[in-house]
Length: 182
View 1 (tube, rainbow, N blue to C red):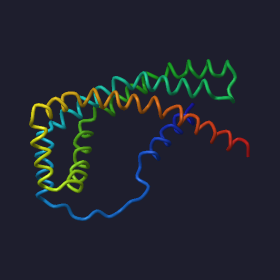
View 2: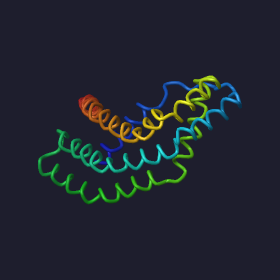
View 3: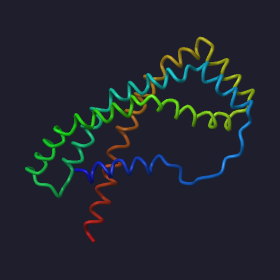
View 4: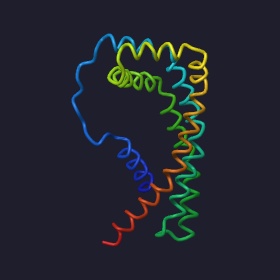
């Protein structure tokens, strides 16, 4: 069971880490300042907090489903072993969910993400473009977009997970079969 969980975590980690590292040029201080102002206009801190809350609410079902699916698809386990593993999963799930809650409730999480996002915007857009984005997010349609963003992000992640998880699971099963065949 622990091997399966480690495989999931590893797969997600490798899938989300850039394939290469590069040295970033110094950022234009005006772009950094404009980006911070834009993020305030976007109320991005509030959007991120709400998105994290919604993601946390969806996680118990996703965790249970993913781990249950891994156990059920393990061809090396008998029906009794699968039943025992699922019972063990149910016993361990509260601790896993408590750890999940601690992760999502970490006060520094949003600050760290925002700190990393400033260069992303400052490198991608000119100062003038950032000002235009700020104006958009201050407009009624921009505010509507921001109000809907947490729900859209949560639903988008659910769609991504629904599409990705079977493929990741299949890849992990094929890898496990190849390793065990040797």
